[in-house]
Amino acid sequence: MIAFILSGKEGRFVRIDIPEQSGLSLLLEGWGLPHQGGVVAMARGATGGPQTPEVRTFVLASQALG
Image (cartoon, rainbow, N blue to C red):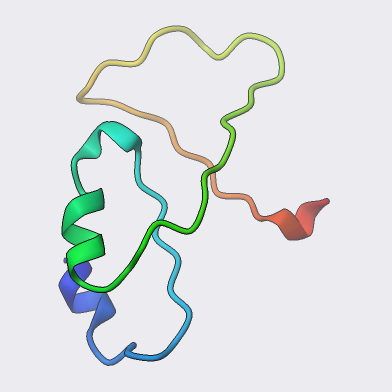
């Protein structure tokens, strides 16, 4: 799926956020997408309890939010 999304994007800015433990870093670097820095995961208050590998919650936000 990542290869499909990347097709036709040569020379353009592409951002893919992946968990460190996903094992995708080496694959993506091999495709010409070097690591460009990290992010800090933050939570306000309780995080809602542990999540199982089958169910994970994701929220998208950008630096533009301030």
